Image 1 (tube, rainbow, N blue to C red):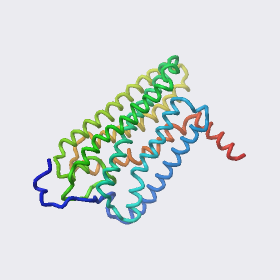
Image 2 (spheres, helix red, strand yellow):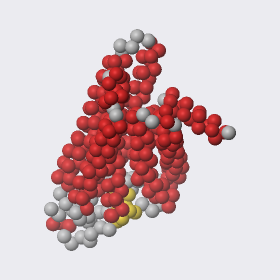
Image 3 (cartoon, rainbow, N blue to C red):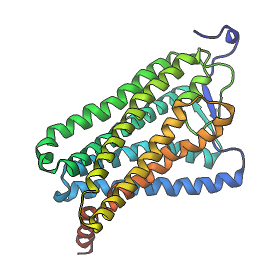
Length: 314
């Protein structure tokens, strides 16, 4: 229910995103930094997608999931970074209520999809390493599409649709200043005239389902993978496998850890700035490093890149 104290207030039609403060010199530096990050993210993930589509040797379940991850990262970055770049360049920090809710919808959908997709990818690696004799029969084309379409994309967009429909019914009045660099769920709810407790509980529940549960499934898969790797007699094989697993686990832990800290802990005055900093990790840095960690370090992808380079030369 709307707060009666807001009864005589004028309804808000736009928000002001405080972003990263009011220092012009910092804005110039951040603009150049985020511009490089955005173009690198788009270029790196586009390269991975192009290689997977063009090279028939990469038409396997693992690279099918990696191609979807790269597509997801491009959409994910495009939802957040262009608006940040415009505000840093022009100084215009305003965003309409409808534009804010639209950004929240796509951001929430894509982050939910990525949480599920990372769990699916870890399950795929578990089957390939721990159940190699059954991998081809189990991870067939039908199961790949079911895990991807039903488990990841549909789940992420469905969860975000629920919250977006509820937020679109809210009335925003009073302050229109949002202490964040994009339209995030909790800062947006706190600007509404409605009781935020139910929505914060919904955010906690959805985060529990779409981040904590996939994170636990991912950890279980990697524990099984590491246990299997320990049985490898070759020391070189162990080191190579551990190197790959460690890099994957590092990125996964940073992504899931920062998401859960932002959405599952109450927003206090002490945690507000900390949450804003951690939001940079899963919104900006993770899409940048994912193509390097998951794809461009793989021997098959490197070989596909060399073949594509030779074709371009001739």
